[in-house]
Length: 84
Ligand SMILES: [Zn+2]
Image (cartoon, rainbow, N blue to C red):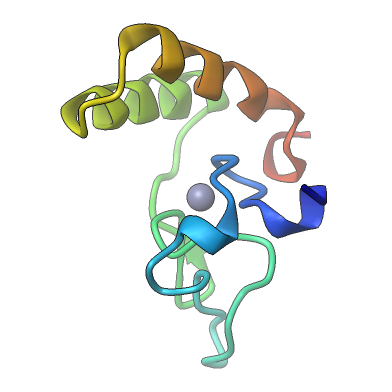
């Protein structure tokens, strides 16, 4: 999968986003960020990458993912464009 097709904040493939991507301030779809991370031109979660990783791990476990998978997923976040 092309890296442009995943959210550059959390790493979720945009094809998994039920809303097809976040929204820009002018109303268009964001091609970089998913709808969970980015709404109306702003990040929904404002914190450090470490806090965001923790936040996502908790969310994933709530959604039934294993601790290992949640950890693996969050581990890649630091490489994404938002956190560079
Ligand atoms: Zn995201």
